[in-house]
Image 1 (cartoon, helix red, strand yellow):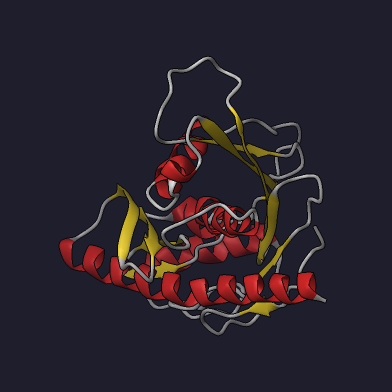
Image 2: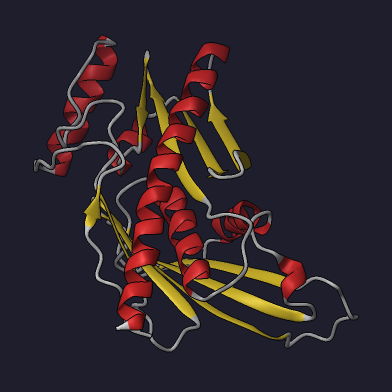
Length: 262
């Protein structure tokens, strides 16, 4: 399977800017202490997401695969199957979806910390299982392997979106594509698509996984402290960004189809 040429798509405009990590942390800490409006380190406004670069087909040995790069966060997902389950199981009218999320040893600033992430694996499964037509591959299994090459913030929502694209690339029947976006609450502000530094200082976090065409939330995870008004606003921001991100996924699938027909 050849890789579809991907281009960076914006599901909200954003500008890239540099800066040293330690200086950014100190600046962010100072702004939060002042509880004032502040510029984000990469030049984005509070409601701007990072440019999204996505492509299909980077892993030729897999049934389907996808690569995603959102700022410094880089993820690759490979899908295998449907194939006969290795575990003995009674006949079932529905198939099985297995999900595994792991990090490379160089994904984070702490070297040698590459491990399977069981919590993320379970959350990835929960986000995707409602979208996959499991009854189309009875008594077989589809395996989804997500590998975080570099962790730069908002890892899980990027993993979920990338996995959805990889499943579609593999030809797995789905009710709709699933896209996912997270927000962080820092002081009085709600910011979308947070970086690692911003997540480290957040008062609360919210993640939404969403099927835009069906207008269904497949997963909603809330942590920390939130007021009711902020939760409503945060969910609406995530759903809107998910809908725009889904258009980028659809464009990548169109690119893949065009290349395959050439």
